Image (cartoon, rainbow over all chains, first blue to last red; front, side, top):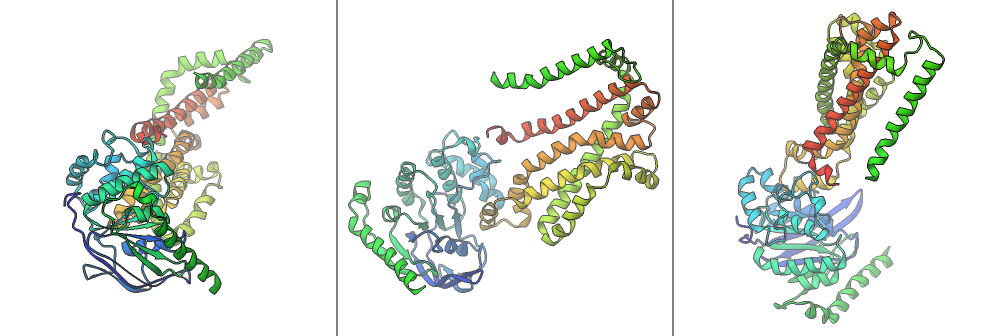
Length: 258
Length: 250
């Protein structure tokens, strides 16, 4: 499978519940992401957004509910998902090229993955850094390398867990512009977890707003703008206000009921 | 440049100490069997060098065999303890206790059980070297960031690939720290084993010349032991420098 020739698949989650040490984190959560759709999960820190991605990857097991990819039920770690955690998690002992080829190394397709990776190094702004170690790269470059590693997984759905959360504001904006340009080329279904409203508005086809524990979806916003730019983003005050009211409203309701 | 100045400070102090030592021996005319002067030790070292090197070869062989065996055992036990936490809880305290038993007590027992050959000396080295290697490797495995493990597992890696790709490489820097300590101990371990009962080796030489009150030869032998211990430590550092280039970039 070519990196820029991915097979987008639809994802469906039905009635997902999960408790950590007896405390409910997710309760009867359902969501849907269409083929090639970019969906953001937006909510305050600690509301269980990352838990959803870990349940999808199979690292955690749900207490109840089901996960379906193209209507097929997934119950274990599957090849459908490529997970990118918040920290770049590049292995310091591997070169950037070896890092981005991790999936190929695990599945015995190293040579093929290396060719694909080398072809995409310039596209990801990593040209010339193939044999460097992660410590030699800037934060933004490390995130791009982590993103290339995720994109090189033979998976149909990308799960991005606050991928730019650890970066400074300027680098984060650059990376968001870069991802916006890349998303058409990737042709994958993407589930992005973020607590950054602007990031969600700028990148997503649809935003799902989560409330704090136990998490559930309180609102869903579709964004149909095709030509997005920073100027367009700065004008989205009404949308920003609406999202904020939903997040703060749900947080307030939770506090009152506790 | 400033770093080089700092490196010279201990050399400077050693030179001053040697000068004081030499001066005291000459001024107070201290006899050789009480305290040889540095110049006498150096002259003896040069004259005894062929004999010392012959004994050193045996000691280095025992030390190298002991440290390799310790490394293999530590790697196996470290992985087993990481796989089975119950085993770790059971064995870890025993490992600590083994270090509290004086080696000088155990070495004669090994000779009773295993004879005067090379085996009891290697076992003495193993008992001295195994602990720092095993503990550093085991702690290294335990401290691996779980997020790395989750990442490779989400990519479909099984247990063996998780160890090969994440856990073992992540535990290599702490393992090397333990190995450096162990390598420095290894020569002393072999010497202790030889001291109790041997026909060759620096420990045997040391015992012989000590019994003859040839303290210049004792000191010359000690210098060789120090040199070899530093060489063993240096070998591990050399391996780290050559095989783990990412540590140089930190």
